[in-house]
Image (cartoon, rainbow over all chains, first blue to last red; front, side, top):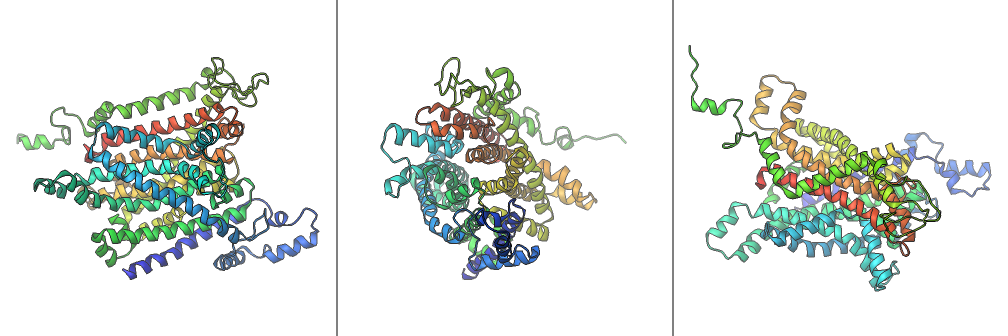
Amino acid sequence: MVKYIIKRILYIIPVMFGIIVMVFIMKAVTPGDPVLELLPLTATEESKENLREELGLNDPIIVQFGKYVVGVLHGDLGTSYKTKQPVLSEVAERLPNTIILAVWALFIAQIIATPLGIWAAVKQNSAVDNIIVVFTMFGASVPNFWLALMLIQWFAINLGWLPSMYNGSLISWILPISAILVGSIAHTARAARTNMLEVIRQDYIMTARAKGQKEGTVIFKHAFRNTLIPVIASIGSALGSLLGGSLIVEQIFAVPGVGKYISDAVSARNYPALQGGIIVIALLCCIINIIVDVLYTVVDPRLKTTFMKSSKKRVKEAV
Amino acid sequence: MSKITTPAMVKLNKKTKGRHKETGNTPMQEGLKRLRKNKTAMAGMIIILFLIIIAIFAPLIAPYGYQEQSYTEVRLGPSLQHLFGTDHLGRDIFSRCVYGTRYSLPIGLICTLLGLVIGGGLGLVAAYFGGRTDNIIMRIIDIIQAIPSILLCIALVAILGNGMWQLVVAITAGTIQGMTKNVRAAVFMVRNNEYVNSSKSIGVSDFQIMIRHLVPNAVGIIVINAVGVVATSILTISSLSYLGVGLVAPTPEWGAILAEGKQYMAVAPHMVYFPGLMIAITVVAFYLFGNGLRDALDPRLK
């Protein structure tokens, strides 16, 4: 087990290296001269040349790349054009807010959606099932920025119950979390329903019924546990899309998180901030995926032996 | 020597092979029949066709031009003259939404198709050759996958700049990793079938095997998946325009119309309601169709 975890952690290295290469290529092809962005308009030609030398912009591209990698490894993600502050500290300041948003949304979504999905599957083709399926369909289709605006319109402007903007208080988290929650519930419930439908077609469920188990026991003891496995597997991708969704929702509710930081960086063409944000989010996604993969082996003992024996490839096939 | 036909041979006859026992239909015809009976799928398909017709005949359907401004009719609520009301420049929102079908739909479809060709090709090659080829392709996909796809799209548009082809490149890039993984998984299931091994043993080229034998047998899962990708692509396109990258105002893209309307939301909520509804209806239509398609074509759920 420990060997597997170490293997997974080591696997971050090539992935993150790939991300850094991608981000560096982005940096190399982005329009605009960073020197002009960082210095005031009145700067002399000499000070521009000095800064260019200092930033290593006169070096050959391969040396620049080497310096960039070394910089990133030392936590230097560049300097924000807008604030002239190091990107890393700016992102680090905002990261907790994004994590709170994503984790709460994920947590509430799992609690609501998993039972809904299972309920729908158990009563397949009934009225309940149809309602849940229709809800998940619409929930997955509504653009989250539109939903966020609608929530503001109804609960903040018309009813005046909740603040329309994030102001640091607990109550102002409700709308941002709800805005990304709906899509998440829809996707999770859909996945849970599909999984459950597959599980209740298995032979062991028929056996359990044949030996005269009560329906409740069959569902909860035999089927439910097996449904959890794919549900856990989907948490990784769900968190990924929540982090993506937070990009827009944070912007709308002015939540000071990484998502708002990135979308502000995009509209202000603040490339170092954008690149730094991408690296941090990618690292976060990698870490989440490792945790999910490890959890996965804990929940499904069948996979443990497969995981142990061989590398990633086997894992992928098993999944 | 006279030909002897036994019942068993009739069964194996090419014309009847794989056909339905009673109706004599091919599996494809059976699937289509089930699809036609599936109300949700049909509802989705009708909405999609309807939207395509709107896109084609937009100039005939829209009562006003999408850029036609009228300073005397600013921020009017919905009425008979202006079905969806007017915006802050007096432009008819209904007309703008009608023209909007000319952006989201074709871009979503084109990007999915491109993603299918590139990502699907990669997945096919990865699954068929396996081993090192598979490893290299999937490691690259792992790297792309570490970035949430909407973030990847935003980053690409930010570098490439705003515009139609830049948007197509970005959205396509966002679809590739999912396509690769799905096609790879679908092909994995069929690649060890006897007919593939037989083809190999009689010296059919790898390319031929992939195109003639693997793709047709995995096509169901791939198509079902692609329909879902169209839906998410349309959502991504509008999210990007909402953020002000990709297709920006005054382009009548739904996300862009919505972004223009949001500052007037408190006084003229209709400027936000309708473009959002258009996006939701379009995406729902593709999900409905995709779901119905899965129910009809997936033999496991019969």
